[in-house]
Image 1 (cartoon, helix red, strand yellow):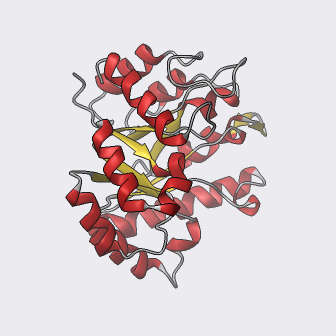
Image 2: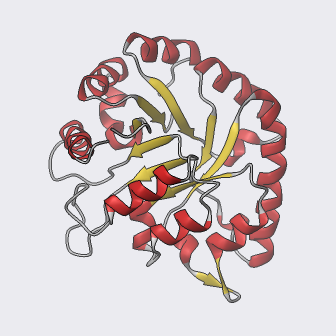
Length: 250
């Protein structure tokens, strides 16, 4: 079995979370997931969320937060919330246009991320960035993803989304190799050029190679399932994702 634990991004079951978060967490634990990554907190306190996680034997394997949560005005409040939650991974999943509109904007954003990572480190918190597909477009002779990550300090980790990368015509293996020291968590998302509803194992992501790349570097701390489109109800979808990973020895 893989020593890397498996979590799920709660955006995958966002409607279920909005209706009944504690019940959804219980179902996720029963599927065999070991952790969850938040995408919003549904109005609950960090203390309440942590209690529900502990009741179900789950860990917090991250949270997607807007970059504005780390502004000067909200930085301390954000730190305190995530410390109480027990979440060490703060992941920015999206950047407003002004942060990525040019090479100069990307470099300025990279510098800002580096500064934030330095401020978070004394609190035991880490800052990461999650890709979509546009980061793999070229700009001034270089892929935007590389402009950003080559300019950040190594403390800023990469949360590579395999499916999103392939939607951007990128090879996830290339980026896992190039930034092997930054691949702290990874989003396991399928990509299929023929079926947008494909679950892991039904598309074109080279899963065995992805796992081998993550497991050889001794850096990756969490596999995180994310599924955004569904052929069956969301909870059944992530249950099938977990079963696929189990069959793959993860």
